Image (tube, rainbow, N blue to C red):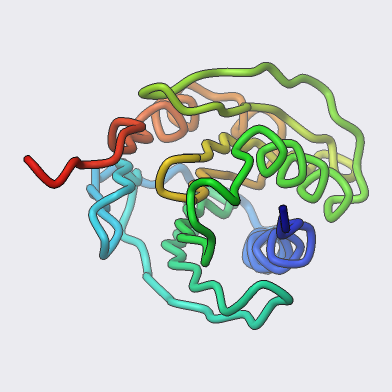
Length: 192
């Protein structure tokens, strides 16, 4: 069985977020009004409520197992960077190990941050394995993530935020992270 480790892809996502966050660090923060802005990925498999308008970008990456396409939605808000990522992998379900892929994704996130994991816990969303955690990156910069992997239609979904500790752990950012919705972990049968 061939598995694609996500550290390279996640490193790129993390750097995008960190650069967006740090571009405004040091400026006096004025908390903007929250404007709930729903996002649904192009394939309809990920929905989340951003607290402000967002931009969508698609990135392609050639890997040893084939091309992967990553749809990113990003938003700068209150000296922080918020993002989602949705990826469908070029695997058949019988060649894909969701738990192994989740472990690789989490390891990749922590490694790419070059930080220390403060907390993490497993979760399940609609029958899919996931994990949520917080990583201390440097000084007062923290990275919070929720990752969910669908093994029946090999795909990975991430909701993440980079910013100052109090904001990353705020109710507003909890609402953003917890608004993540993905479809049930099942494959439609031909009779449906």
